[in-house]
Length: 200
Image (cartoon, rainbow, N blue to C red; front, top):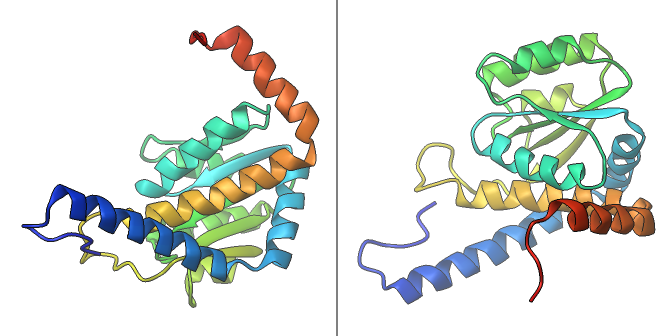
């Protein structure tokens, strides 16, 4: 929650953030149910589209995931304008999959979204903190975040952001691996045409 103090040196801040990152990734890894993860990967791989729901740093993590998935031609939808996520739920169906990211799992708007998604028969994957919460109750599948970070009494969402991105990176990597050679070809071909950077 407060990984450095007012008079810490720059070196101490850097070292503390290394320790924090390593601890969060280790703790998140320990929480993974790999049987659940396998089901989630199969579901997302076979879904026509993936919709992501969340707020704040949850959306930032989702945008990074969307960026990676676009490189392997997998459609991921995110709405960042306030009020538009509920419209995304209205167009959902059983051929889509929803990834709902919420550290608390109790945000009123998030619960509103998942209630609509249930009526649309959309499979729901929750990425949320450990313990009972409403989001986990509604979800078909759940992956847990490292849950030692306080919701309000903290400097910044360091730990939760690291935990979210780690889980989404695992999901991306496992989907990528299913068509490893084809996805590598797509990625390289795309970059050759669209990446303006050139190796020296």
